Amino acid sequence: MQKTFIWLSLFFSVNAWADTSAWSTAMDLLDQGQTEQAIPLLEERIRQMEASGTRSPEVHHNLAVAFGRLKQWGPAVYHLATSTFLRASPVYGLSALRSFGLVQNQLMIQNGVERDLLFRFGALIPPGFFQVLIVLGIWTVLFGALTQTTRRMGAVLGAIFVLLGGAGIGLRHSLPVYAVVVGSDQGTLLSTEPTLGTDKKLVELPVGTLVTLGPTQDYSIAVQRPFAGWIPVQSIRRIETKPL
Image (cartoon, rainbow, N blue to C red; front, top):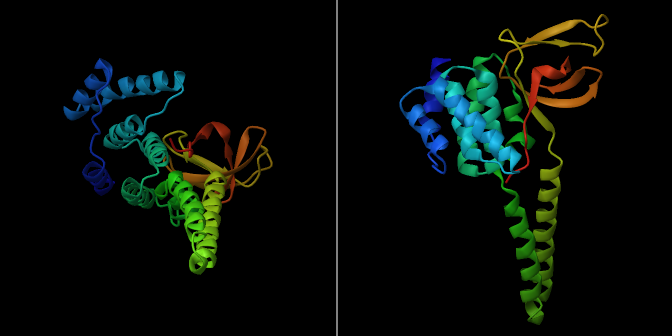
């Protein structure tokens, strides 16, 4: 676990972005190692931004760093995942994916959700890339039509670009629902059935485990990965995968 924290510290140092006195105070507290005092200020900043309909990957990033220092892996993984999907940046995403892998391995989760191709797709590729492909495809068709010799090639290449862009946008909007286990310190028991009294306990999911969600029934929700079963709805926190 110590190696995980060291890695997070190296690759996810504090993002300074001063826009309010409270934010500046929180950054100063993090720089001074007063992590527990900084967290409430950062969480209040998130509430203020949500009330105004805005989101900030920087705030979520710094909360991930803060909770990581305290080894509170549930909120640390949640805020790191939120920051990752909000950014949808290849550079940030690659470092984040490695951090997810280290934490999940420390939690003894093999073949975790962070290895899922769709999870990586959403973390690494910005939606704007596919919009550029569509525009490029349209311009390729238009420029190809200027001469007889390039008309056919331009139409084919343009159609390929447009199809790839449309498929990418569609795939981006069809990502599974991801969440993080944030139950008690002892983790959350995965059950065979959603109804209490008829279920059997399968395995304990540690706090901080990334999961892929299925349908909800009563007070339980289905988990599809990394293990199939049911857990209480209140034991997970959904990750927002829609980028800025």
